Length: 312
Image 1 (tube, rainbow, N blue to C red):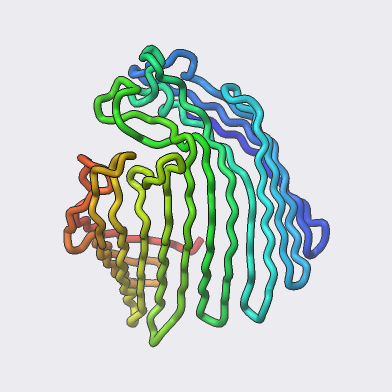
Image 2 (tube, rainbow, N blue to C red):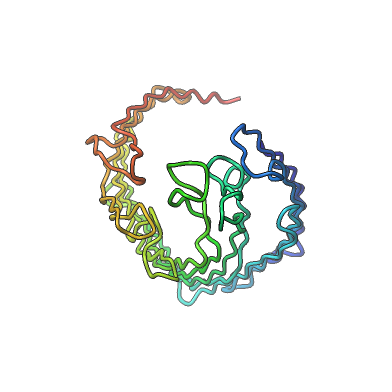
């Protein structure tokens, strides 16, 4: 279980400037009969952070810094710098640089899927450390918004669920990828057309192991969504498609998992101002697909909801 205590506050210097402050204490404890690594049942972390926000005419700027003191991994400093400028009416150019830190969870370290340090050549999981750069264009006018963001993220010791052998499970083990490269282009847009609200996203990415050039296990190069909804009297009707390209279940890229596309439907009826009935049908065509070898994904699922929202 996790205990988290956070104190945060903000100070407005003037209309266009603000300072945010954060103090945090996190305590993790793993109670699991399958613990295999001594000394990882408990962990604590203290953190302090500060942020500065500036809006000055067509320019905007954010700077964030944080220091974490982890009882297992020691002290680490992270930060992010973001900037944006309006280069034309409704069109903004944005960019950011930053670094990140993520410690392995106690479950990843100490469960039956964590490294068994009694085995020859097996070492404890390292924490992830990443460096990210991204640039984008965002345009908004009336009911229409579109954006394009290019990014490049290099992560050392990326934590993945990989092949068996380093832990006590025959199904796989948590392990580090020495250097991963995550880069790509994200496109998004939404608009209104002839009574329809339309939304779409497309991610073209290359999540690779930098040492081999192969795709990271269970990650795809292409992801996309299309959603549409409309109001007809007291009805709100919607439909959406989520699609994914193929991926590989293993780091060697020899076990292929096929791509898929799923249709999801929803309908909501306003019985009264405070009472609404809704039905959701996910994976309407009952497609058989898998994002991890040997693990079944959800079949056609129907959820009926009655929502009452009284005004107090």
